[in-house]
Length: 189
Image 1 (cartoon, rainbow, N blue to C red):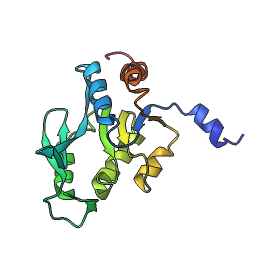
Image 2: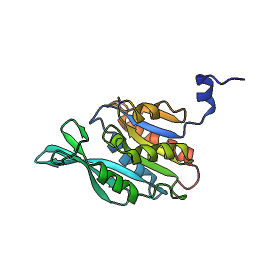
Image 3: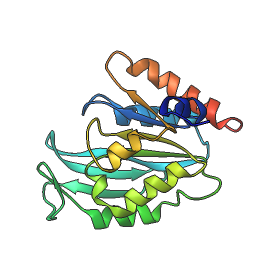
Image 4: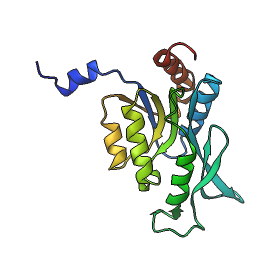
């Protein structure tokens, strides 16, 4: 018996949740709220926060669950890696990723904010995301609405569910996502 793509989707359990939507819709906030709702559950990962100066966005900082911080991109950084007006500090991002121990056996849930163009400049990040999705860990991530390479490949995986965030479903998803994670992760959440 041959498995068609539709049949394969029915068989493979979708254990990873990807939140997508336009910039500023609240993807990072949804990840934060979901993690807060789960409490001290064995999880790890990072979110991306805006760096603002006088109300103007100047870049993006990475913040781990443990509070470790690094700059991902900034208008004042010099780098050959650019997205719009922002230069991406791939070396700092790689060092930040090295400091996270997302492969720890006790870490059952990994959150990533975000799988996007800036992060995609890092080969280490590309390898990390693929490895996490191939593992038994559950991944809760935000992902760019559009993009090729890693972004497109991750969206095509049969083990991911893509949820588009909107102003209409934000509040409901803030309740639904933690409930779904509890169902997938089972005991201890």
